[in-house]
Image 1 (cartoon, helix red, strand yellow):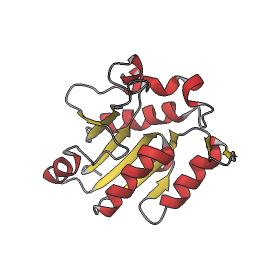
Image 2: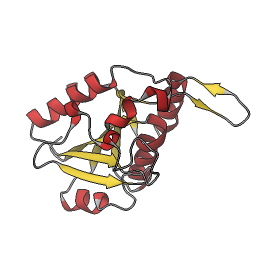
Image 3: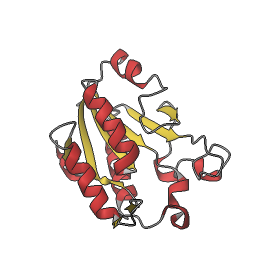
Image 4: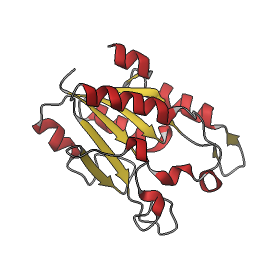
Length: 182
């Protein structure tokens, strides 16, 4: 387990603005992510933070917006790696892959916001790059989604379908208790 890194994806204050993002599932995601982070830190295992720096000025995640900041409970501590990205994947435009390989890290545990966007894309890339990936399902969350034809999909369904499409193909989906127990 010592060569397993925890990657926390986009735990930023801007995602708390539900008037902007809409309905969200899993209100316990942050609490579960904190449990995972606390476990990792207690064991002195590698912790990596990823932050979305939107290029869209109106975005709550734009670097000029206060929402770009990390949520206090999940903010990096001194010595923990931080990667800024402006696309969905934590691997594009960053040195994340090279840094993981240089440290001999081959297994990743991912959690964050949103399940179907940045967590999903980063998971698929990590799997395709040959990393062994576990997603902490109960430490992820997303928002309602809709199609141009007006059909709407509740956040919980979007979350579950995103995880189901990753499980067994790009990652293994577990909950925080299972990850901590292993």
